[in-house]
Image (cartoon, rainbow, N blue to C red):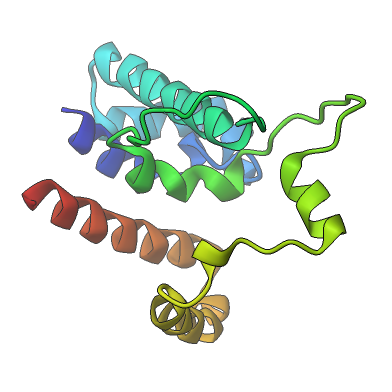
Length: 158
């Protein structure tokens, strides 16, 4: 059911794109939800999926130096729901400690695992950027979603 809800909601940016003019239009959103499903269960499932994705994303970015290693397993819908990234922004926080990446960057350290083995994949993906940038925003997000969907479906078959 989760897969179907994600795919259905993806087609209606007014349900997740907070910068969309129609996101503020209650009638437009209600109409979109009716097209997705008449059942209230779908709205609740979407809210639950979105909230879980944001929580997982926050956990990933808030890993601290010296903290215990996590299980290393990502939530199964993380890749598929990453199409939401442009539409959600983390809230600003303040503190007196610098983040580890900022400290390493300031000290001139680089992550050796980030070099070499993924270079070919990076070059391929970077070659898609100019074409992607020429697309209208909604089409661009749909294409990115489809790429994530393909990768997700391929991972599920393993």
